[in-house]
Length: 76
Picture 1: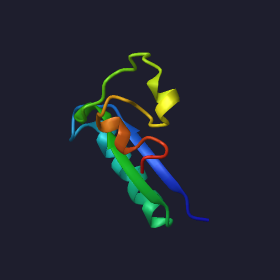
Picture 2: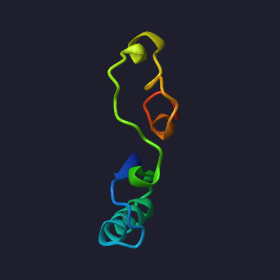
Picture 3: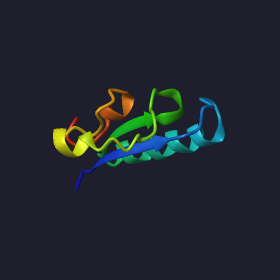
């Protein structure tokens, strides 16, 4: 049974140990037939929650249009 998997990394070092480990996991998961979406948070424009609560009224994951909205539930 194939799964959709989101891998979120936080390291800013593209050639570091975290990326090497993540790459190995992704390759193994893809070899088993899973679909992987990789999101390197440290290399993206992602702001913290501002507690404005407009997400509750709009249904969009975040009112502020940053890179988080590319992986947020309901936006992919």
